[in-house]
Image: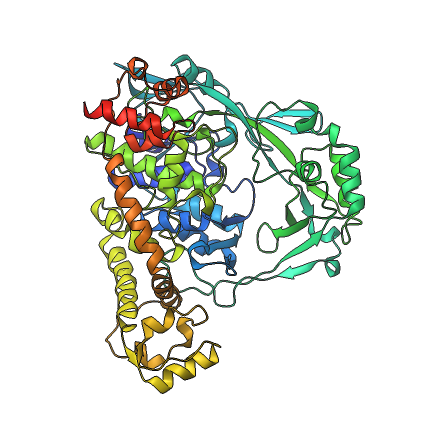
Length: 625
């Protein structure tokens, strides 16, 4: 423990992605942050896939960055391949993703945390929390050490009651080779918190030297990549390829014949797994009409002999895993560094949280990450950031930062968690956001910079740099009001196979044509106004965003009107001790769920599964009465 301190403003339990974000943002506002970890050498460890971002997750990383978080910057420093996904679809669902060097990422995370003078490292295991007048006052370690604080953020990942499964073999661990944490679940349950069990899995790590790479197909990132962090100025990352292979009928048959040996199918695993990230056994069982599945071979770090086999998550016995894999072309002689495995772990129903991620039962106690039933580095980091910000605001006795569903994917994530039952590990997708046209990866700065300024989440220099990007975007958009000569206009339309026009038109009007892109417009349109200098990669992105603003204009206006209507319900507060049982007009399901979840606003109540419009109408009348 640095400086021998035993009293803190914030204690963060766990040093994974949620814990790192929580500790760093808390340290921005306090000189007394305690970070507790079972193993301080694993700070920021990427325990599963060597990638950051992806569909909707990339938007979350961008949002984390604008709000002063760490993940985007660390990804830019450790990335080995960057790519925008979903380019074949509308720009509202384009999503950045990066393959990263795990070792570099962990090194960057460890260095930033270790060199932060406001973060005090505590090597130990938290087994209980301390309360004073039902408010949090600290934690108790396994060796009975008491560490005191004004707030506590628990971010234990899969370490709570972690149980690894490989076939019939069971290992108590938080992840392979690392001890789990057993005490804190019982302590929290004794305080009235409701716990459950979830399951996730990871694929085998293969020996690079035992693969015939001539039979695998290389896949590269974008030729002109875009970084995650708005604070990244110079950006020339490598473009190291991943590879793909396909399973076939022999592989499918081996898995099908031995599927009963998988703990998920034998009944050994009680936790519910992620439906949207199924194991190879699930794929064979649920999609039996498919004879092949694509697998991705991802290097875990530069020069690594260890290959992450994305798409082959499994808990089958090691011998069966190997037998099935050796039927795949290129894998005839493949060997493991480590087999795939499933892991069960404890989580706590997130309906027990406020929108600030503070628990409803114990003031000053916050949960973030997989303890709330989520999966994924990005979802965990987002929760850690918000919990860290709100822990400090709790200490300052000011209103918490709560992001709305129309402001950020982070707002969608947290609102879904606290209003919907978590029956499986929660993973973010663009389809979860009803306002996703407003939540583009390329406009995170437009959406959230004012929030960041208001809450002092970025330094003045960083705010200036992001404002410059925003200013350049505004200039590009205003330049589109330029009127083009008729001859020039029709030449552009002809090149884009669009019908001609009979009179002059603006560049903006021209851009509304489906086949016309902003790159088709003459360069002179954008050369009339003095511009702030910004990095080339963000200049390119600003043109993409300007085109989206024009093409989605009608949809954006429509969604903004929907948001205004919804805001009325979001602003109707529900007293914490409101007695739903006395409202006879509510359905039995509504009374039960409203009493259990205790939504903070009428808007939250409306989004609880099973609550009908009729229930909301009755409740709104009672709240106004």
